[in-house]
Length: 240
Ligand SMILES: C[S@@+](CC[C@H](N)C(=O)[O-])C[C@H]1O[C@@H](n2cnc3c(N)ncnc32)[C@H](O)[C@@H]1O
Image (cartoon, rainbow, N blue to C red; front, side, top):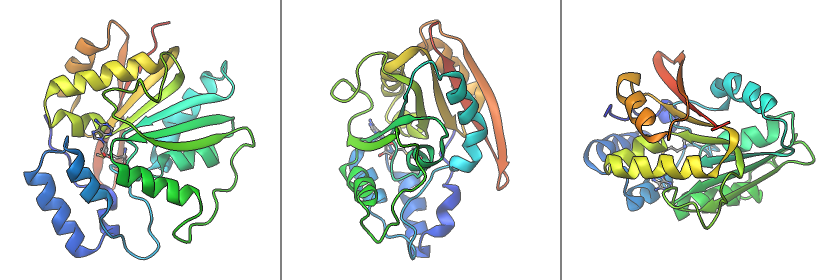
């Protein structure tokens, strides 16, 4: 399993915080909720209120928007971000997608979810989220991505996003990662797509996804390099 690299936007964190991140990532289990509560509570510089692992919406939109365009049989489109953390991906999709979208971000960290809800409510001097399609919506809920039953019914989402969450869960063992995959596929609509964004090499990730994807086609696209690093988008396509 490839190591999680330090996030690209780490430069936006205070220097002391960076060292704490580096130490934590080396020595702790990224499947542990308490570690994530600590990481998500780290102070951020100035008016920086969100933190994206790997990369953000601008780097992902070239892949996401055509997929949303194709999936427009459903209106509004439903998008789930599992392990959303304090990333800006959900908010950017909500404000910038030209089609109506219902975006739900879930994370098992109550700290992350409270933070995102406070931003949504205009807390922390945050400017209101402007520009969204009038029929679009955005919400954040606390949920374990290994058991999405309380927040997501089967087949409900046209797009399920996982940016760095498999990577974190897999640190606790591959059985958790397979359970995550199984839940993502359960809530995916038959024509939908699950996208995992990761820096993990296809030699490692593809066999796992092929084994766990219940016969669905799996493809991979190289992304980047962004700031010198190459990433991958692993797409598990719907069953129809
Ligand atoms: C590498 S971070 C990625 C965060 C965000 N997706 C991003 O791109 O910035 C992994 C996220 O998964 C969350 N997470 C880990 N295990 C989880 C689980 N079992 N259920 C829900 N969230 C989980 C962590 O709290 C963390 O926010």
